[in-house]
Image 1 (cartoon, one colour):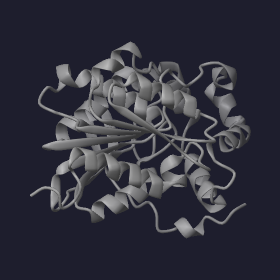
Image 2 (cartoon, helix red, strand yellow; image 1 turned 60 degrees about the vertical axis):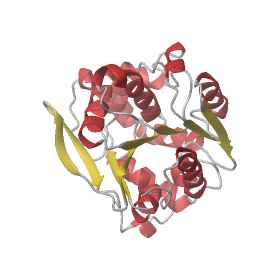
Image 3 (cartoon, one colour; image 1 turned 90 degrees about the horizontal axis):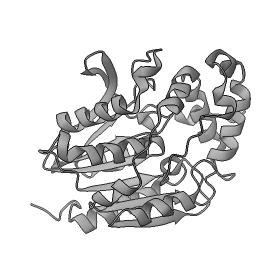
Image 4 (cartoon, helix red, strand yellow; image 1 turned 120 degrees about the horizontal axis):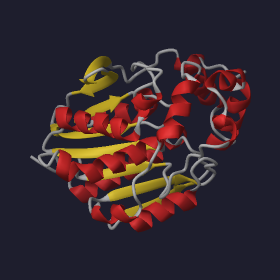
Length: 291
């Protein structure tokens, strides 16, 4: 097995458990910015992930003075992990994100999301004008995403959760083959797989059962600048689906990262950061551009 000791100083993105809504406790990391404090970047991870997967962007944007917010979805990382499937209803997860936006939003706000988190983020953006008319999101960077719901309810995930736990080694192998490019650093892959051992498969099963995904036709309402990035070897959310999403969004740009799988912000952090900076430039939000 690859040595993951290079990651012994992690996690970098550390949070505190907060009751975000009655009975719902999430681990939220908040970094108040300096000379770009009135621009807040919100990071939403994917299913089975955690907020520390944003560590490379987090480190860079701390240095650039932005305010940052990242959270572990319910059932993930250091957040609470209720066993009731209804706790992971799509509407409940979207409501959690809306409350995070309400609490931490500033004058300018940017959403960065990955995989399952992109669906939640898009649903939250669609709900924003009615739920939080006082909050504006100025741009979005979406990684490893799709136009239509990418998650299947059938196959092995139809089995009881206790059976899935027995099959965890098989599931982990399949995920590794589909999620990572063959050139990915084996130490990184080993470290991330070590973290996933904390994930309970009853949570993932509940996510699959409850996932709804935003309505494709409704996406035309989202006119904020959006950048969609895909990995050329993503076996979970193929690039073609991300391109279809970008075509559906009125002001979206699309880019494929070479030699990259599903974990874009971990496999190609420099390219993801460059795309983020390009978006900030178009929004006139780069450090030094505003007084």
